Image (tube, rainbow, N blue to C red; front, side):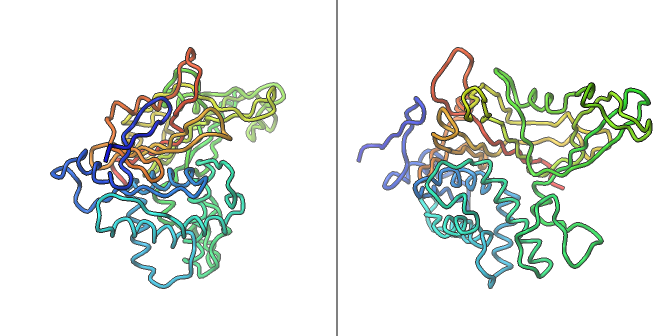
Length: 373
């Protein structure tokens, strides 16, 4: 049987689906194939590439996978939730006899469509919206179970156990994804600095032409001047004053999820368009935009997964993901799994100004800390 091939963008890539699934094992090599690891594509139910790509990325964020499987082991008899469906899916993958293949996440998608009506259709969905919903919803389920309540109804940054007002409920979702931003405002009249903290489970950053993630983060934390009609009300001066304001990271998460803002609304066209600018994302990252009182500001991160949007606009296109597993990189395109050369990652940075075509661009980046707390 001849090797199947598919086209992503303008690149021809070998397929390993169906009878050719063993090709992936050959590409990795029997002596290098990680013991007890499985690489399974996910069936697309019409428009579920947005879900498949995020689930694959999360599966290869090891702290997340481990906690989901631990939840599965500890909760043998619970009512069906989106978390139990996710745990069943992950467990199904890790207990497969074969090393590579395909799984249909039918129960998970059915439950997802019950939990959020916006996903119960065959329209194009946004992978980032799905990620945020999933993380918050899982957190709500855990908080509900800890308090003996029903579950969903409490957001990630507002997660409190109803039967105690002493402290926030710290869940394993908090421990993995949650960081803290601090907004620092310096009054230019009295020099008093006012700080306000807020929690985050991902950082959404603007993108510019021919830039890098590092530069995007620098712009994210750049100083803004509050003046004219946007002056700051200083409690020390008891009046509105000009001020400098900036956002810095106070608590660094174990898994840092960076959302590149690829879709923006353009009033001229009365619709959202895709920003396909070239944005270089490094394999290693250190956050320099940390506050003076940040814990472990030198923390180093390694890129472990990228959700990629393929196409020219938000309402058309396709999502795939690339992940790092045991030192090599794989590409997941729904039910198809391939090993790729690390140099291929550059293909997903985006377009330069002189190239106009459909593009494959990094959309959500997952960085894992080398020293999880």
